[in-house]
Amino acid sequence: MLKILIPTMMLIPSALLIQHKLLFTTLTSYSMLMTLFSLQWLHMPMMLNNMFSNQYLFIDQISAPLIILSYWLLPMMIIASQNHLKTESKPRKQGFLMNIAILQTLLVMTLSANNMTSFYTLFEATLIPTLIIITRWGAQPKRLTAGTYFMYYTLLGSLPLLIAILFLNNQENSSNFLMLTLLKPTTHNQLTNNILWLACMMAFLVKMPLYGIHLWLPKAHVEAPIAGSMVLAAVLLKLGGYGIIRVAPTNISTILIYPAIAMATWGIIMTGLTCLRKTDLKALIAYSSVGHMGLVASATLIQTPWSTSGAVILMIAHGLTSSMLFCLANMLYERTNTRMLIAMRGMHKAMPLMTSYWLIASLTNLALPPTINLVGEIQIMTTLFNWSPLTIMMTATGAAVTAIYTLQMFMTTQQGHMTKDSKEAYPAQTRELLTMILHALPILLLTLNLELIY
Picture 1 (cartoon, rainbow, N blue to C red):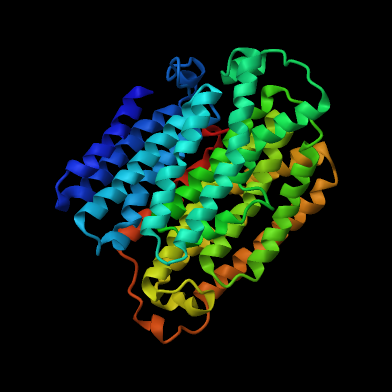
Picture 2 (cartoon, rainbow, N blue to C red; picture 1 turned 45 degrees about the horizontal axis):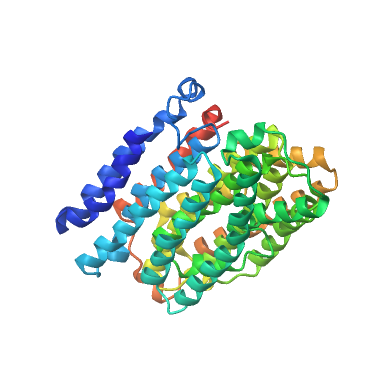
């Protein structure tokens, strides 16, 4: 574990010490090397023998795919941000890359922490570099409002979790995840159980986010720079799902699970309908994320082995797909200087090769067979139907609406007549094509061999 964690930490001083002209090249190749190292965690026999675990950090089949996903995105974030940073001075470039390196280190430690107290500390620490990335490198003045929303929602959701962790630690004399699942829970009355469950889950449901407490997400996504959007969509939202999977087996019985699942499944339809009338491309992709994470939230809350497996698959699939969509949206934004869908039409004429990547991203987003998105969604829909047959109405309608708005987004951006302003749009650069290939490749490989994350 440490042989990858320590080199990740070394990225932080590297960003400050490497000379200016070699900065991006060195950090990209260095992070790509670490990505290749992290792929060893897909090797199941070594995982089952706890070869990568120690007293404070551990990796299992749930956290390994998410850590590999965060490592996979690290070089892509650096590549995608080059155009955005080219006018910045050297100290600002260094500051940006240092922030990304700190965020990566904290993410890996959060996803591999083995007790609740350290998990909470690291979970909250990821807020700081993300907030700096959004408020310092965002494009519009509204980024400060977005940062405020992001901070208040996350902090207010997380404070009860700290009290709940201290309460559980005081009762069981341990906050280790494994110990809490094995110990017999201390019996409380129903009111204490409800408050304890709500305190434990609220932080993660805000982070996912659950429909109803999702308002910070579109704001943060729209205002964040491309690297911020990528890491937010791909990994930070998944911390919510991961947290529920880890904390839910603490054996707190409650009836509050029913309104939470009802809100999550209802949110799939509502966010889909919101996407149909969105004019801002980045906001559309952000709302699409809320809908997909609604499926993950409902799957993690019912806690069956089948649903947990489906949730992990969908988290990985959605991480790659939404990150790819944000990259494509950013490419159009760099050429047209607008996020409005109506001003981006006819891009097929200017960038025909990118249309094929738009098609791949759109089809994976709407869960076309045999992509991993479909496998994850079908697994979750099956478990939800098994748990309560009524849920099929919401999930099936949500899947249909998702297909409609995704195809509408694809057709609006690619077909029709180009606007006068976008006629000078230059074709895709090599670094942009590389980013697209690095997104499409794992989607394809996981579709062919799903056992790696199953």
